[in-house]
Length: 201
Image (tube, rainbow, N blue to C red; front, side, top):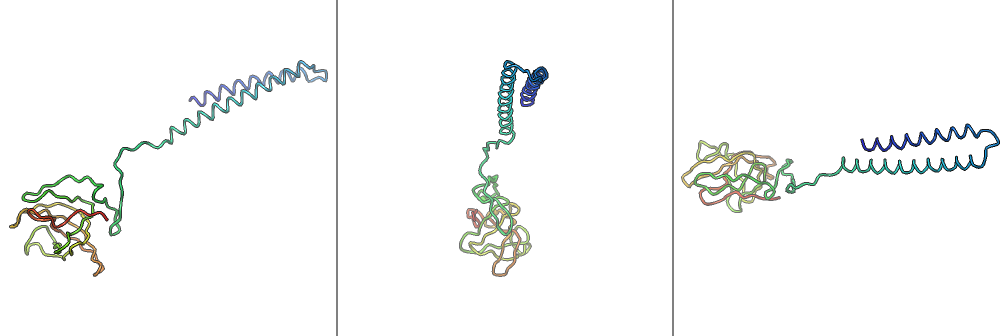
């Protein structure tokens, strides 16, 4: 609105001056135009030029201010998000996610969260089961070797086994040697021992 007002005011003023010039031109059309008339026309033309210059500068300054406000980038106060890709899917690396701690009865506080990557701690492999739990009622799909990298899909499901509480997570593991991807439930640990840890690629 301010931009249009400044432009309209300048235009109206310029039109008024032009009308005066036209009137002077009409009166001085005869060859006998005096020096005073010529000087008046020159002065009026200079005024028109000055008004147009000021009007253009005002309008340009206001348009620049409006554009700067409209397209200004907002200041972000969010924690930086750094995505990564694992098995062709974008996930949130551990350290940038803010998982809600889960406490399964008889087990340490869980360190995993859905969508992040993790790995089996070096050493013994971790069983990948069809359903969360131990024993024949929960068949083993495969075993993820120590150091194997997995992606957390779902969980946890808490169970209590003979060795203590267990936090089960449904995960995805790519077996490079077999060239295939396995999905199943694996234990984050039992009792006071972690078998799976958060891992940043």
